[in-house]
Image (cartoon, rainbow over all chains, first blue to last red; front, side):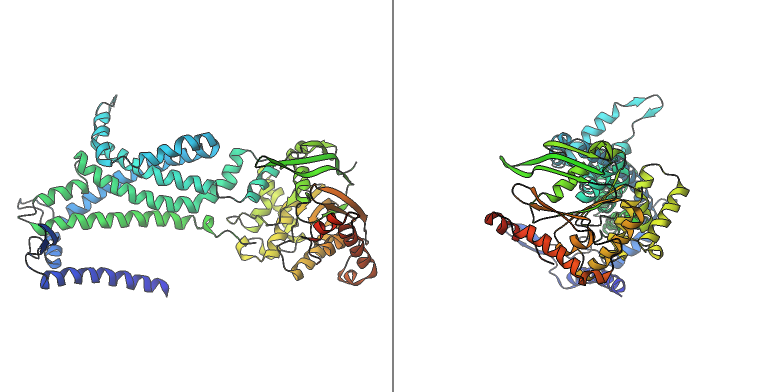
Length: 289
Length: 269
């Protein structure tokens, strides 16, 4: 029953947003509203705020006037798939490295003191500043037949964002067992690795799942922003810029890749949720005694 | 050979520059198969003593031998099983898998494990719950699983740190009766920390009464109410005599200051 309610409220929320958009377009001031030379409310022209119906119609029309042009929705979907792949690679790298950091911090208290501040600091470096650097460094890598590609830079930047929540979440999870559990393992003469495998890893699963959910969202944002700032081709970030540039002549087209990016983020969250479902055994609430 | 020999053991903790003496020159011998309770108010070091025997902590001075070995060797050899106040079951493992855990960790074969687990769930009367998960069991049932887990490797010594402390009175009395039965079946020596006088009297061959600050043994009282202990025993004269003896040892100390200290923190259940 509560699940049905959640679905209904979700749908109502989306519909409400659409109604708000159309209502403002219909009744808002045509020139918008500005005070002290600052535009506070947007104009309601078709150029600034196209009708929702027009946006939807535009998605099924061809991308451009050439004969073999794909419909917009297909171009957006393909770009999303490409970005999702890049983000997945970034998430995987970020998760593995982040978990490695967590293990290191768990094993050596001194590492926790040494690494954690740097991890926090690393997240304050603006992504945009990092992108050209990574592209430049990556460009110098060439090992045999392997050559660095732009999308790899994007994946590295995405992993940089995904790393932090995983490292912090995993560390909290690995440290979550009760004292009694840890002492029990000690009474079994279990070593560090045995305790890790039988106690700390299973106990960390709920923390890991929520960390991964955060990390997936970060990886998606990182991918889109990195695609924009590195100019990597084929992804949704590039498409957002490309379509926005044709805004004055084709205003409805710019909204498709934005919607695509939102759906991509939801898809990533859903994939993590599915992984979480398969680990349900480890997510039973701690028994109260 | 005695199960446990504690000789002149002291333990002090450093708490913010000050030193707290948890145990001061404590000596105690527990014979094989004997049931000994440690009782006393909070801060008398009874749990500390248990933890030292389990080698979850090491003494500041003095020596501890478990079946003639050092405490450390005894832990590595799995000479004891331990039960804490919280059952401490792993929530992602079924009841059978929880009981099986120590056997799995020590490389016992799958068939041997399965047989032993079947015996143990039978012993603690939870056969039909073997494939359930801890959250589906009541507190008393969880504690029975913890006891079964502690007995998995047939230790000669069972260490219990207020195992029934979180249970309600009815469940508690039932668990005590079951513990008496299980101990008779396994013939393990038991060191049982409690602050309930009736519990100590009902279960024990001997009750060790401790006093706090610094933790010392004040008296050792022989109880031994016989091998068959049913619910009726709780209403018999010998039981009351034991309760009175322990209570007087706890409260009626020669130094009046120690007596008030002792009275605090002891609930006369």
